Amino acid sequence: MASTNNNNNEKNSSVYDKKLDELHERYKDFRNYSINHLTNTTYILITLASGLFALIFNTNNIPKFNFNYIPNFIFWFSLFLLGSSIISGIFIHLTRAYDFRISRNIAQTRKRFYEKFKKDIPYKLDLNKKSIGYYFYLLLKLLCKNIELISYNQILDLNVEDKTEYNNFVTNFNDLRKTVHYIGELTWCLFRLQMIFFILSGILYFIYRIKIS
Image (cartoon, rainbow, N blue to C red):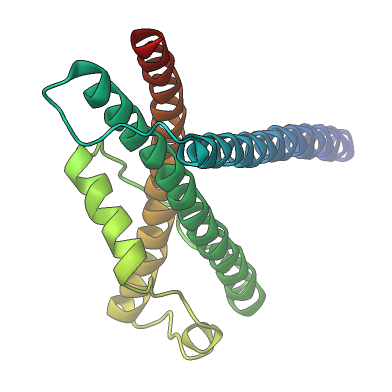
């Protein structure tokens, strides 16, 4: 009877692990699709915006700075939005570079920790909705400061018996996971802005051409 129960438990465990692996593979597939789609769309928008920017400045009828004249104001505002779209696209590549770098460090840290201590790092994330000001701060931080990662030596020298040292390590690790989560949100926010700026600039430039025709 006990042998039958053990066989059933092993069978259930095998089915459970197989299902987890299947769900994990699906998650990886959709994550890769999202990343590729984001990358391709960002490149296309930067290329189109840069081409339109160059086309506008190659024309001989660029209006002067005269914001009292509505068509001129529309032209220069559309140009400002077009430049903002290009800058947003550049910032997207910055945030994605940090996203991949930190995610790689997180994966390496979990692997090295498991190899040494034969257990996973405790997972605890308290994710709160952040204000727009926080995302501006995060972008400036990525531009001006270096994000501290967890080195291999930190894991080698870690003493899990020392509760204070161990808790500090876990806190630092989970802070990295929080950071990469908010960087991901910032990336999608910049992507939406890039599209909005590009579409609005195109509409305003079209209106400008109608006004002067």
